[in-house]
Image (cartoon, rainbow, N blue to C red):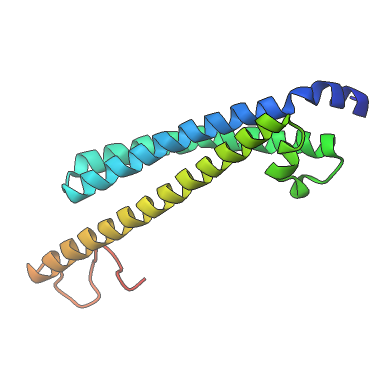
Length: 161
């Protein structure tokens, strides 16, 4: 494919990026919902629900792998269109290929996605801390009940790690 063909085919690149951002946002919203629901299940000590949400999260993460492959392809296309290396492609350069109204929309949606991803990371960190706390307490109960007959015996969790 020649550069001229690439330029003709990539006149839709900003629209493809906008569509991709919408898919990323929808996925991030689903993931945030699952992480929040998992946090509720942890707080309620509902083991079955915690495990079910973990399975749901794994399914969503697998779907996000597909989105990441699409993102990589969009970056590659943009790099060709802009005449730069893929590592040098950023959203401002991509937005520069769009009409002014679309540029603002792309930048706004990108900021929304970053906010969602930050919230997911924060809530996931809280969930991890809650799980660590629950496992530490369970480990303590087992030791107190005599389940650990010798020092250094079987533990549920290495809390010093």
